[in-house]
Length: 236
Image 1 (cartoon, one colour):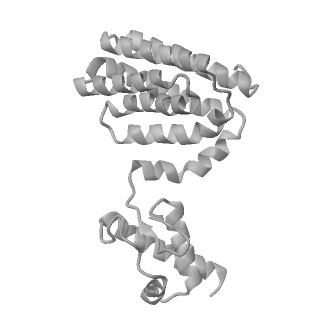
Image 2 (cartoon, helix red, strand yellow):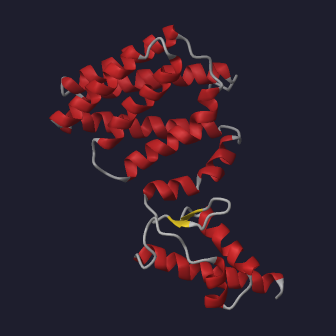
Image 3 (cartoon, rainbow, N blue to C red):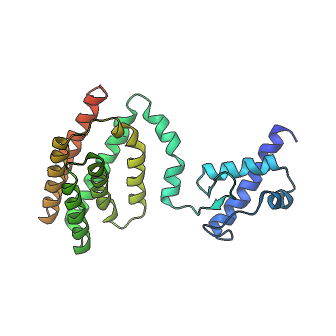
């Protein structure tokens, strides 16, 4: 088989297995058929089968581990976003890449806090209060504070009950993590961020979407300035 023929054969396997995964014929979390079984089913070589499985793995449709049969992973919004992770991380290295992604997060969260101020339920408020309390208790533990900071923002993404939004939050957290990991984390900065979170929640409790958006904007603007100075990025 020529290289082009191998590629076409692998694409055919990918198309068929993807169809079976999406339709449920291959059940979520079940193992794929063994390599030899796939070779016989599609009348092709081990190399072609492995290339097809690699493609499925890159698309987030199977989970592959050495010495284990790949496991079916039925796609959801998080799967789709995770599959783009490597491309996004590459784009972050482009001029303005981090700023562009961060601005999209600011735009998103401004809408989310307005939504929360208008429509947050008692359970949503309880979740926000619990997340804020955990954030407060972690002020002197920067690693834990980072986790609880993400968790507080994560609640905002859950309130609209749209499955795309929590997946986006996971994406933002993952894509921006390399930048956050390089930044100096100090208790005094944690305290400032906690106070910003409290101002956001206070505005939500007052059912004031304008105040909630303003508190969120001030918070994320200050956070971006810290990023910009840390990495010596242009102000514009």
